[in-house]
Image (cartoon, rainbow, N blue to C red; front, side, top):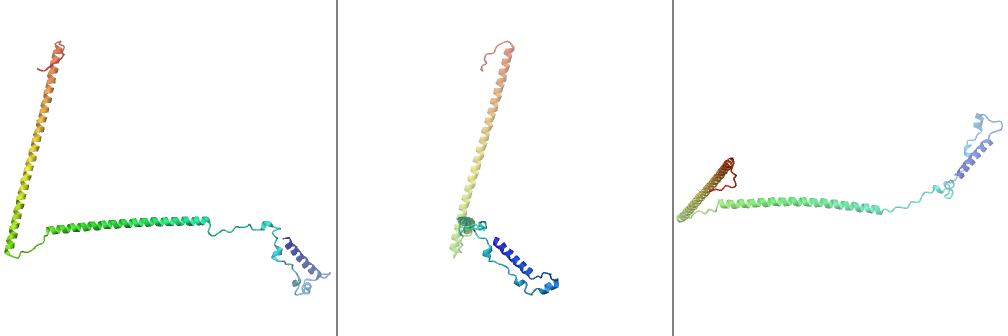
Length: 231
């Protein structure tokens, strides 16, 4: 900084000296002064210029201008590696959770569809079995004897059905009669028990009234009642 100011002062002094040397003692007018000056007047001025290195202060003169040493940071640091690992773990965990939920949903849908298919297949099988029971395989008779034999078999089957129906009807009738008789007997038994309890309660009440009257009569006549016994 001091060198630079020194060179600037030297340049100004040289320019002033040259301008004073060219002016006469009596002075010149403005027109004459302009005419007397050569065309390359300003070209004679020598400006002292120095290099940037000479103008800049050295490290010994201005140590505070030195930049502090910055240690270069590596591209892969421990914090970056930690953040990368955490983001990778978070991403893998999210993908695993999404995959698990999707597979669970798909498996549940497949199980529901399989259950529906099994239900439909079971219903179809049951319907086919019932249809086969209702519509048995029919074979037309080839002769009159076959017709007679089928008719006799049909009549025998009808007779067996009638006998079974009669037996079931008689058994049902017998069961109904038995249940009615049992119910009637139980009703009579309950009525008899209720009547007996009612008669006993009336007798006990009458006995208590008679006993009270006897005690009251004896006490009114001046007797002391110790104990009353039934005869």
